[in-house]
Length: 146
Image (cartoon, rainbow, N blue to C red; front, top):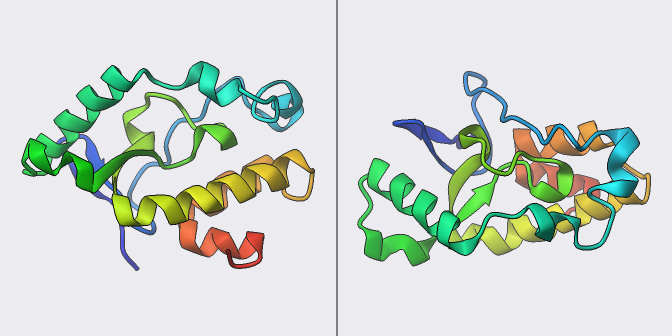
């Protein structure tokens, strides 16, 4: 099992967390009873997303914390471990991680699938959040293994 690594309050993303890592904060506006007016409303996540300048600043700090040169920034994506589309906190440090770019596209597919399943009522919000938090690759099983 691969796990995220804490370095000076920053996270480096991988497939799953070890048990000693605290679960990230969630967006308090998003609960099962509010999904119709939050995550299941088209454009809602874009309305709460960080500005690119803020994303770059956070990413630069996280790269420095793990000793990666700034010119390696294109090798990583700033990832919301529990995505905004599943009610993850926008700026909580526990919910932000550097994700190798080659993993980002695959995780994005799982995120979109889980969000769709939640909005269709096929998977509960908390179940989707827990699944992607514990191991996003295993969470793909909820999507038929995508």
